[in-house]
Image (tube, rainbow, N blue to C red):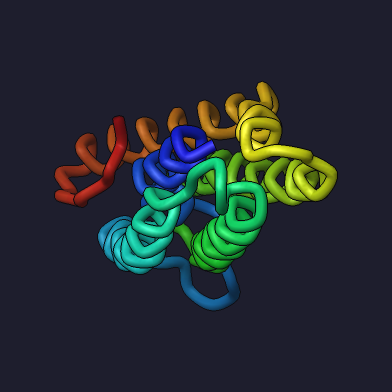
Length: 169
């Protein structure tokens, strides 16, 4: 479970900025530079929260994992949700809209999958059963899509001579 959660946290960090690329609120669209600056800010906030959770995940074991893992996954899910919705709220420029849409869609799928898996985890009889639940192929696929959106965002920034610190793999 800890490995899956660590993977989830890492992917979340890797894909932070691309979420910022498309949905967006009203008003004038951000410039591409502003868009990536806001995405980076959201990524930094998410990174701080996920680092705190990662420290907690490091202490999970057979004794406390059955009770604590679902609580930590729920906190991680909430952090991902806040991050994704923050990215969705950015008013991305046209150049970034597709990347933002892809990242937000994948991020929302991660949140949906985690919430469904949390329901399954409530009936687990051991920490090992909880760990296996989060090895879900649909969750892993959503993270893969998220990673692809991050790579596309990195390429978009580079193609426009924008320096941005994205944690893409």
